[in-house]
Amino acid sequence: MSTRTSILAGLLAACIGGSAFAAGAAPTGIGWTGLTKPQDVILARAELMEHMEELMRPIDTITVTPGPLKDVEQLRFNAEVVGAMLKAVPHLFPPTTNLYDPKALTPQTIALPAIWQNWESFYRLAQNSSKAAEEFAQAKGGPAMRAASRRLRASCDACHTPFLRKYEPPKTKASDAEFDFDSVLPPKK
Ligand code: HEC
Image (cartoon, rainbow, N blue to C red; front, top):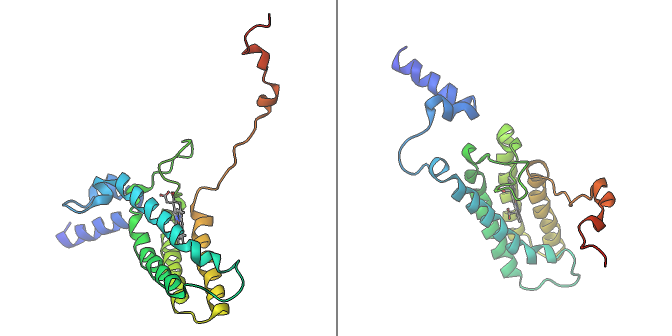
């Protein structure tokens, strides 16, 4: 194989997905934090998301409070920060952080493998959401800002619905009802 064909073969192997690392195509050198510190990358995106949620709170609030908007400049600033954060979002999902464990009670990540199976769609949803934040920052007047706020929130949900573990309230099992409490209580005198 010529050098050129082997480079092409390597690229092809890397494109074919998850097995790229196993196939020895892992990038080497400093700065590949997805390889050296996947847990830190997961933590970084969780914190980023939590802070976006905080910045979104006043933006969400305007859709449920009637009357003239207050602190419009602050709302715009929050949206600009959220828009910038969303530009970083897809870069915090290297394939080495595809570590969702459906059996874990408190999984280290709730990002589903579907992200890496539908990467283009995930990437586009992040870009759309960033754009929605920028559009909010530019909207003028109460009705336009309220509509833009709803669109921005919808753009968060559009990614969470397909790509996050569903919230499941704790289930009561049939065996709970049949549980014999007397068996664990101290004997009656
Ligand atoms: C392109 C997809 C995408 C978009 C857009 C997105 N998120 Fe997320 N979000 C995720 C993923 C994936 C996770 C789970 C990350 C993990 O557990 O590793 C997450 C997790 C979260 C969490 C839970 C964080 C935690 O404690 O684990 C919050 C809160 C959150 N997102 C808020 C937002 C808000 C607010 C927006 C919109 C302004 C938003 N997200 C937009 C993909 C997205």
